[in-house]
Image (tube, rainbow, N blue to C red; front, top):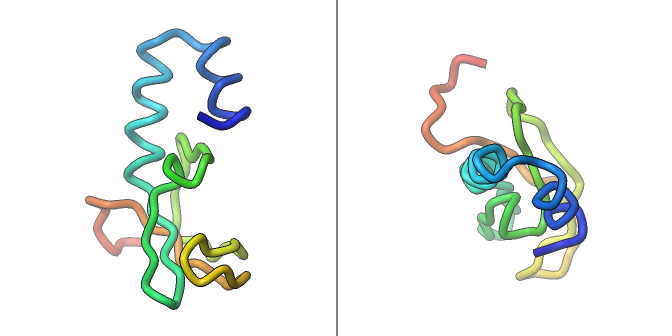
Length: 79
């Protein structure tokens, strides 16, 4: 667990932390190389968010800084 995740875990009620983790795991950041990890696996939190942003992130597989497409599993393409 990263520092950000651990801070939220200490100050928020357990049921909120569980929802935050589940939602963060549903949000995926996909690198052009094909690496597709959840925000929680990357050490981040994405809770109460919407849209399909692009984010500049360093890929743990190819080790390159690239624009990652951020999507949420189970959402339709209505945005």
